[in-house]
Image (cartoon, rainbow, N blue to C red; front, side, top):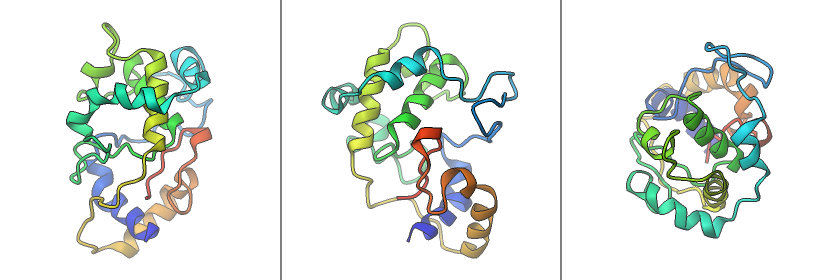
Length: 181
């Protein structure tokens, strides 16, 4: 089942997902196209990662996000608003902080998380991430027609598994998102 999802993600959801972006650097010392270190451990990201997020407080703070990501953080089947439930907290922290810092371009999220009048504090980012990680992964996910599964598996194995894992489990310590449920 996980390989089926991975193949579908690569072929169907990957290019259409609101968070999908080309990979420009693969470890913490490589610079991206803008000259920034991809995974530099400093500033707000470091503070949020050091904070022990409280999922109860995060559930309250997440209420602002429910209009797009739904109350169970299942997102939209189309991928227009990604599923957030069950993802590594470190991945969510990195994504939110990167948007706020201008490292990650996400026009849909920018009004909610970007610099200026912060909707969320650094602590709330950690709390929301802890809450999202605590949620069960929804059973209903976007699925394509199932054609091209062999090719999808081939592409995933060649280009994606090195970071996201053989079964799409990701690696929270390296900020690689889980791509399978």
